[in-house]
Image (cartoon, rainbow, N blue to C red; front, side, top):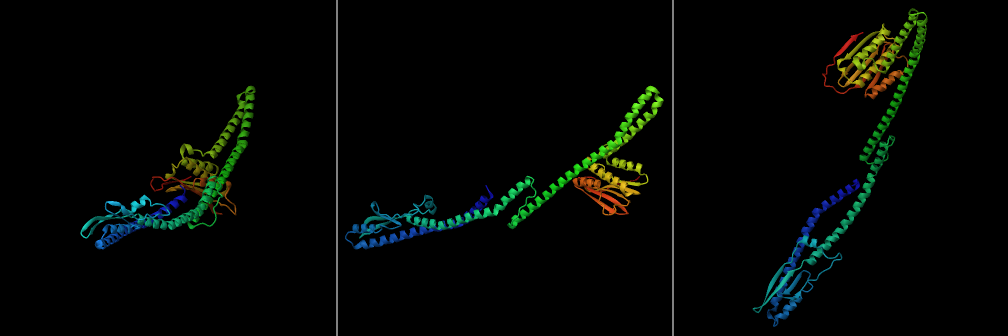
Length: 452
């Protein structure tokens, strides 16, 4: 059932409930009125008969006077009178008619007034002439109450019908915005997040409209952000592929070509001059293979930090620092990793290692630092990763590079946020705060600091 008809049903139920007390009072009054009228008619009829019998005391023919007495009750509305045992000569009341037809049987039963019969003995000059029976007939009185009841119902029924019609129309108009809201929600469900609801509404529906518009705006913003992140991800993927392709072309391909030439030369010398003459080419092949192995390890490190899957986050970070320490021994290194950050899950470990990897790369290549510190700690559900250096920082209006923007998007996708602290001439720091599932470990945060 629709909301409109439910509301109308509630209104009708309320109207019916309000009519019940009035109906009970009307029923009690109607029944009492009919009973009172019947008692009065019976009392008046009995008095009239008794006076008439007294008047017959001096008549010579009481029988004729009795017939006249009975006939005098013809046309009475409430009494049926007859000589006992001689109903043929009785007087019956006039049966009145109603424009609405006969009184329903249920109404007669509701009024509940039954006919009452009394007998008046006839004694004239000491001689008994039988008795006169008087019986009340409530039909006409009940008919009168029925007519009053139906007349009193016409106006309220008309008013109720008009009221229900008005409620139907007004509720329809009041609920019309809900139809617009339904259509708008269907559009949002289909992905059209620019859908909005406007117009003047009642305060309750206005709050609903505002909430819907805010929801749609947030969905539109989230959809746009997802599109941007997908584009960013595809761009980063293409950049990584391009870098790998360039490394393969610039670093691996020449050595493969050199290995091919040295192998051919070594083969010819082995046939002509022997093993001693071919030794130089064999050594060249071995050197080329070692170089290619180093390049392949570097590329694999970019794809996945070395040691992350085998030994965990701590080993992977130490390998990164060792990689740069071999190339920049003049830089001092400090590493501090909380013992509560040893089992954060593969995806969290990968995200942290990427943040550290990119931050270290930027610090070494661009900052000219003398000291770089890496700290990874945990406070409750928050994982804090910081890479700081004492280099020159970013000078002027320059923005963080594409790599830092990329890891910022990666951190944001994990529900965290990335911030940069830049002090030109003093240093630069990268801080990532990530959210991790709560743990039942102790609140104390044990940190192992290492000077490298």
